[in-house]
Amino acid sequence: MYNVNLVLTAELAADYFTLRELDAETQVVQESVDIQQKGLQLVENRHTGGVASGLDLAQQQTLLDSTVAQLSLVQQQRAQYEHAIAVLTGNAASTFSVPVAPLHTTPPPIPLGVPSDLLERRPDVATAERNMAYENAEVGVATTAFYPQLTLFGDGGFQSTNITNLISAPSAIWSLGGDLLQPVFQGGRNRANLAATKAAYDESVANYREAVLTAFQQVEDGLSGLNALSQATTSQNAAVSDARRALQIANNRYVGGVTSYLDVITAQSALLTNERLATQLLGQEMVTSVYLVKAVGGGWDASQIQNEQVRPKAIQAVQQ
Image (cartoon, rainbow, N blue to C red; front, side, top):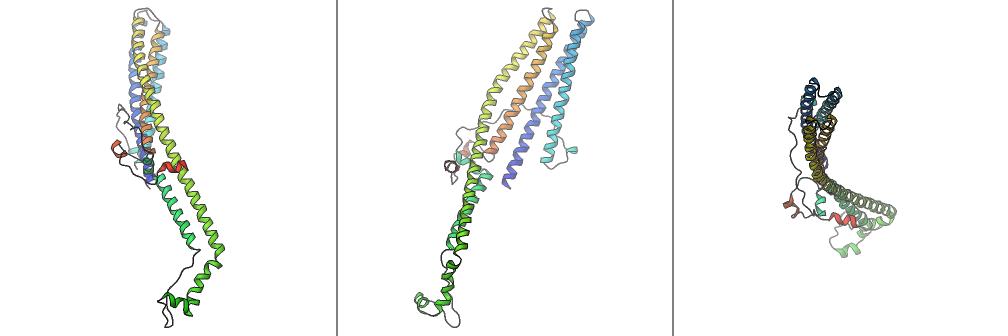
């Protein structure tokens, strides 16, 4: 149950941040549509005055139409994630809506040096560890079947209250004999049961080790992913600033008659591409953060890490 709850919660959070990223991306594309419409108006005025060519006008109109089509696709993707959130929250997609709110946040800080014991909080790892403990106990139960069970009871007016009576009295034959001989007659079945429980225990150990290794992999994937995305975001934000400056220069050069309108169109297209990528990278950072929190078993902060005491240690399963 806890594992299902963790999976569903993480999926809901990931879908929510993706939807917010699409809100921001919609805003970016809409701003590009506004810029390109202004550019189209400029070219139309210059074309009417005989300064711009029909080619300039056609190129700007083509770029604008393409950007409007991109806007429709982004809105369609947002609708899909909105419907997915509706299902995860138990609502009908047709009556459910999420107000538009562009993503302008930053990923939560991830403390370095997360102890491996923290992974024991994962429901799947904890379940595998408990199964291993249960199977280990079953091996002990199967082992005790090889030893006789001494039953102390009385019948027919005779009550065995002393160990010397059990040895000397005739009742010892029927009182103890059956229990003492039982392991002998059932030895084959007991050995088979013991072998089966040992095999089940070995399987549970392997399952536990696999669960821990998978947990380590997911945490490492999340940490390395966030590191790479952080570096990419920094570089991409610089690219956006460069693209804006390039568009401004291209517009000034075109108005001054130094260059053709193709440079302006190229700069507009480059700005849109870079702004969309920057927004997508931010969304990926948020989603990766969600899955990293899921990988370590749920919500936590730096103060909680110092107090985590879990036994047995997950690292022991990896070192076996």
